[in-house]
Image (cartoon, rainbow, N blue to C red; front, top):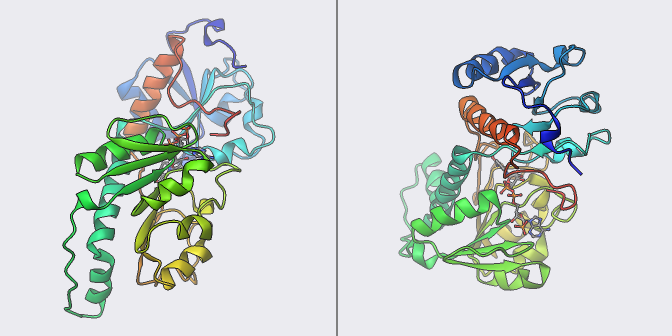
Length: 325
Ligand code: NDP
């Protein structure tokens, strides 16, 4: 299991080695940390590898495969992304060091606002307006339903999914949640596991994907799942691109079973120029931009995590190797 952080002597100036963003962004990080947490010292991670004083923490985004194994003594590794699937696939990744995912209120708030916008866009038919505007067509199909008549189902009801649910509830949407364990949330009908998936889908008019990237969730949203949604349903994909089978989505949109999609993540990013998703009249595309807080917000969150660890506490968003997320 993880080493007890209190086995380490508590230092007043923890040393944070930074890989995230590359050398070109190191000074930006350094300046922010010196402003908001002067007690935390920073060092460029490659300089830290052979330094006589080993770093206490590592901040990473996309380190080269095999390199993090060179830091066996850090107390924790922090990632500037909420998804860490690209890190844990490194065969040399040091599994005994706690790995903390990016969080923070602003990351969750940004995601909640993106999903709220996507739901409003979908049920009001805003993609059609954009399509017509490009062609100078002034025709209208009146939409008379209101949010309270549009049930939204959130697949992946964790840190982000629950914040999204609260925001949708505050805006009158009926909300359903689906997760592995089915942890309840007031005001939400929660379903769990594959046995309850079809019941969840049958009641969902807008499906939000917020699952993490694991073996079980890859290709999860396929023809079977999409066809189990009611006629005219829509989907918002903000989880990972490889969870949605794009060919199946296109087939169900073209057949009229689904009426719209908002896609933020893709199997291959950047999305290929010749992808049929680009010009589809029922698809709205954003460039993996749903929730990316500022460097300053990330730094604030990192300081909170380091303070928690220095006090021997357990940060909320610890990666769990057994669950795979
Ligand atoms: P969490 O780990 O907090 O939540 C994951 C949720 O998925 C949990 O509810 C979990 O169930 C559920 N889950 C996991 N595996 C399964 C399964 N096999 N079947 C059913 N439910 C499952 O993750 P976050 O909410 O922090 O983030 C979710 C994802 O959002 C990230 O992994 C990332 O891919 C994506 N993301 C996208 C961004 C963007 O800009 N587009 C930005 C940030 C994140 P349980 O509650 O039972 O554990």
